[in-house]
Length: 236
Image (cartoon, rainbow, N blue to C red; front, side, top):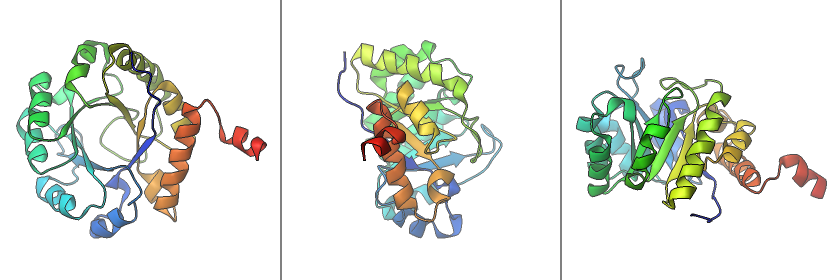
C-alpha cells in the first residue's frame, strides 16, 4: 500500500485564457505544474475549441508540460496522435473509447502518460482494475464542455473511493479533478483524495495568474495536512 505524502499539482486550463494570445498566456503560468489543454470536437461535448495543429504549436512554446484533455469522439483513433506530438500527458474519456486498456497502453508506448477521464455520473468501480494501465485518473467535477461551472460535491465520494483504490493497489496514479476548482473547493477535493487540480477562471480570472497558482497550491497542501487557512492565521 502506498504511504507517500501527496503533492498538490496545479494545472491551469487555457480554456479560460485569451485565445488570441496563447503564447503570452502560457508565459503567465510558468510556475504551474502543467497546462491543461481542453480539446473539444462539438461531438462528444457541445463545444468546439482547438485541435491537433494548435496543440502541436503550443507544445513548442509552452514553458511547462502539456496535459491534454480530449473531450472528443473516437478517442481510440485520435488520442495517439496527441502522444506523437510529444505531450507529457494525454487523457481520453472512457465514454468515448472502444478499447480503453489498449488505448492507454498505446499512449504510453508513444511516450505520453496515459490519463482516463470519467464524467460526473460515470461510476469509477468498473474501471478500478485498469489502474495499473494508467498514470492519471481524471474525475470530472462538472459536466464536460464548458468552463465556469459550479463544483459538483456529489463527486466527492467517488474521489474518496478512487483514492482508497489507488492506495490499496500500490500503484502510482494521480487523481485529477476538473471543474469548479477555486481556493475554497480545492480544500474539499484535496481532502477527498485528489492531488492534481485543473483551474481555469480561478487562475486566469485573477490579476496575477502566477500568484493565484501559488494560493491554490498552498490551500491544497494545507488540506493534505488536515489544516485550513484559519489554522495558519491563528498560528501567525
